[in-house]
Amino acid sequence: MHACGKFVNIHIKHVCPFHFSFSLVTHSLSFAESVIIFQKKRILTLKEKIKIVEFYTKHKVSARVLGKTFKIGKSQAATIINKRNELLKEWETNVNVNKKRTFFKPEGLKIDQRCYEWFIKARNKNIPLSGTIIRSKAKEIAESLNNQNFNASSVWLQRFKKRHNITFKPVSGEAASVNQADVAEFEEKRPSLIRGYDARDIFNTDETGLFFRALPTKTFSFKGEKCFGGKLAKERVSILHNVNMAGEREKLIVIGKAARPRAFGRINLNTLPVSWYSNQKSWMTSDIMSDYLQKFDRKMASQKRKILLFLDNAASHPKNLKLKNIKIIFLPPNTTSVCQPLDQGIIKNFKTWYRSMIVKHVLARMDEATSLEDLIKKINLLDVIYFIQKPWEEVTPATITNCFQKAGFRFRNDTFEKSIDDAFEHDDDIPLAVIAEMTRGMKRISSNVGFDDFVNFDNDLCINDERLEINEPSDVEIEENEEEEGEATTEYMENVSSGFMKTNREAIEGVQKLKHFCANKNDMKGFQVCCDLMLHFESVSLNQSNLKQTTLQDYFNQV
Image 1: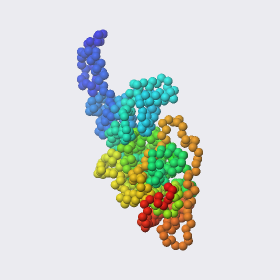
Image 2: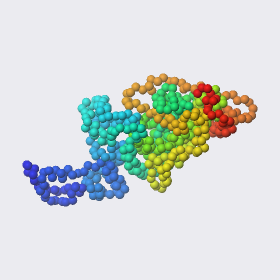
Image 3: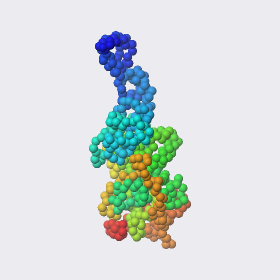
Image 4: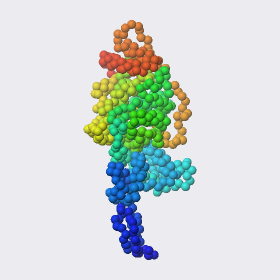
């Protein structure tokens, strides 16, 4: 080679097919030109590698054919084939699909992962973050890991943003809660994620909070309440819904404050129509979620099914749980209101049925109490379990499948092929008679609350530990055990005069006695039958009542 680098003779014995297609030849090139030849190899993005993997999976071709098809080298194609499982696993996460290399040392990877987890939690809470804040947090994490050599420089920040598809821009209103770039990227990935699964094996799981005793009069005082503990924790439960694309529902998980509420009496918790869990704040925890997923995994194994489960990025959802029959796909942060089927109307449908039952329950008893507060406190947690299960049974398979389609889960195969109705609205699946009856009842209780406000007011209820720091003080550990307010009312049976029943009121009181009897005998089937009978007499009582009154305030001076 000439020392000045002007011209050199290069004898090329073998060159990758991607770059050149000639054999042994002699060229006279400048040194700069020769460098260009050896730097020609193209570095592929994750998205490009996945396309190669999908092509190979479908056609089962050789590495040489892959190289010619995608204009890459044979050895590069072989490497991609050998690492296809790793690439597919990475594709299923929320990494930047346009990234080209993974170059982390173990200590740098740990800093990056913890910083990104912190970023997601802050992002889910719509906390504004700047580059300076992220760099400071990364430095703090490095120090906690005893890494004194880490430098959270501006270059590191740019690479961090590129790796995780992070952009900084002002947001407001609904735009603050939905990242359209992440939505578009997830929609591009989704067909490859669900390919090979039947509709009944594609699931979505999510939690919601519920103020189970709330009436329209309490809507404004409860609305926006995070409920991290204390008095309001006794008025709420968290509910985990699990549905699949074929319209099937799994047994509900209900999380309350007490391990065994006194209203449950001697009932075997395994005989309840829901799975009961508890903690001091009535919210979802990683321990509860892990226990549920492991049980669900065993159920799928017993049915010899391999399923796909879509979850959001909540802090309580375990990220490294080892499951044999369930593959978990985490939705990108700030996309659930668009991409998650349960958020497209399934949960609202459930809550509409629940609120309707509560309104009916209260109105049928408005002449038996001295105040509205006294009346609503007579709803105990055993009643609530039924009030929760019954509305869940009312959510139709059609509603569930429509919501999956509305969220973009669409494909055709032998087991699932439905027309897509882009005009679908979840309110269409609630009978008009139910909405009309509920609206009339709401007007009698309060004329200041709209239908949607009453149904949706606790949608933003805190259902997970939202602390940004692991060591951040929490009143979970220091909160004293408090008895549930109103539990003394669980034994609220009234004496019924002897003789035959002549009125609906006497019939309701008689059924109430039977409910009490079934609960003490651990006869849950009998208890549910009594609840159905109770609903029947309540409806008859309402139809026969004089509807001259406009609001409950006419009956009660205190609300």
